[in-house]
Every structure is written in C-alpha cells, then in structure tokens.
Image 1 (cartoon, one colour):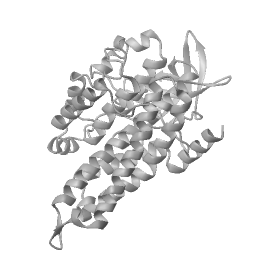
Image 2 (cartoon, rainbow, N blue to C red; image 1 turned 120 degrees about the vertical axis):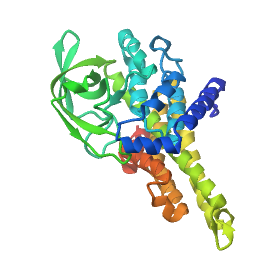
Image 3 (cartoon, rainbow, N blue to C red; image 1 turned 60 degrees about the horizontal axis):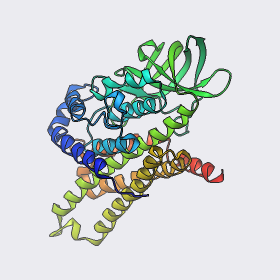
Length: 365
C-alpha cells in the first residue's frame, strides 16, 4: 500500500486548497455567521463549478469517479478552512447511493455534482453507539418497490435543506437497509443544537414513503463511507488548527522570546502533529481499502481512525487552544471554528469508548 496520493488525487487536493483558500476567507465566514443562513451558498457553488463536489461521484452522475479517497481529499481541505457548507453529509450520502443505488438513482445525483442539491444522512441513533447502527426506524414493504418508514432518527445535519435524506432502518421481517426519503414527509421535525451551529434536526416518521437503496450491503457500506468522511473532516479540522497555532507560537513573544523557542511549547506542538499523522495513516488506509473492495480491512482501519479522531485529536485541539492562551477561547478568532468542528466529529462518531468497543469486536472476530 502506498500512503501517498497519486497524481490525480494530488491535483484534486491542490485544486481544493486553491478554491477554498480563495473562497473561505475569514471575512466571508464572519459575514456568513451574521446572516443566519444554513450554509454559505457562494462557497458551495464555487466548489461545484471547480468540480470538487462531483470528484468522488461516477461519470453518469457528472463526476470524476475518484471514490472514497477523492471524497476524503475534498472533505479534508474543506474542514481545514472551516468552510460552512454541507459537504460531509452530501458527499457521504451521494457516494453511498453511487455505490449501492440503481442506475436511475445514480443518474439522479447530477444536481449534487452541479451544486444544485444537498443530501443529508441519518448517521447516528440515540444512545452511545457509533454511526450507522439502525434500531429506531422501521421500514415496512408497501409494494411497488416502496417502503414506509416509522420511527425517529437521531440528529440529521441539514435535514431541512436537503432534497433527500438517506436513512438506515430495520426492515420489518428481518435485516436492515437504506432508504431515501423526502424530509418534507416527516410527521415532525425536532431541532437539535450542534457544536458548529449548523442546522440539525431529528426526523419523526409515520408511514413516510421511502425508496430502498442497495439492500443490506448498503448499511455496512454507508458506515464505512461515513467513517472515512467524518475522520477526513476531523483531520482537516486539526490541520487548520495546527496551522493557526504554529503561526501564533512563531510570532507571539513572552519573557522576551517567541513561544516557539520554549521547549515545553515545541513538545506540545509536536504532540499535535503526531496526533494528526496518526489519524491520517488510518484514515487514508481505510479510504483506499474502500475503493479497492476490501471492506473487512477498511472496517478496522476506520475504527482506529475514528478512535483517534474522538480521543487524541480532541486532546490535540485542546492543546492548540492552550497554546493560544486567552485568545484561543475568543469566538472572534478563527480557532474556535476548528475546535467546534472537531467536537462535532467526535459526537458523530459516538465518542472514544464506542470506537474502542468496535475495535475490540473487530479484533475478536
């Protein structure tokens, strides 16, 4: 296995960095916060026009077919600039549909690649479990390829803004599956606060019509793709925080010396770098294995990445705040965006203990 990105992936990374650095400026993000809009539509459209939203998707959906690694590249660069766009739920849902959906469902992803549609995904159930463990939503066959959903999801980011929500559900009669549902058919919508401030809601269904996607195999596929997307986002959040912190300690002076000259400071920033590298190794390995049809190996890699994101990365983000001193707690300083995003990722993953349970179960098999 080669942990370096190939030429195409590197070009995608460079393009994403260029577009997002230009579009997601501090002034623009501050202006967006003042509007109260759910996401920054200008940045979203710019990403689409550059081909970033379509990069992971198949050609029939207007994409470049770069798969899970391509998705991880885009999400990592998006998070490194803390761009307030629904890239994580949209790309996770779209790539899952592209992998497990019908030809018609794949073709219907074209508006996503064009930036004209947002997708959402119900990743978490209520309780301490990790992502994509269906138990609270039940799907009943209704004939004609339609199922009816009953029950309540966990928190769904950008539910109200999405054209469709991808919902894992227990299928009546046995097994589990994935279903595309129009959020407007929900019987009730319950707002849920998030660390990032992005819009989020729990959806309550009562015989809501839904379209099946891919059968039982899709549930495991969604879990792996979601873990790759969430951990890539956590990696980008830490990378952005590390860049801000290294810039701060190189210029901030204390006792007549810049902070970077103090041994204790250099050791702490080294720990932050190590946490990021540890996450990246497992995350890229898991995404690569998804694309190469190695689901069992990908599960373990991504569980390790998820534990790192929910544990060591959170600790590293606290270190970044500490090294900034009082300014690290100031919400007018951009570090808070990266810290909030890291916290949000840890919540989506169910916390470090849930991931340790997953690793233990996988190793014991």
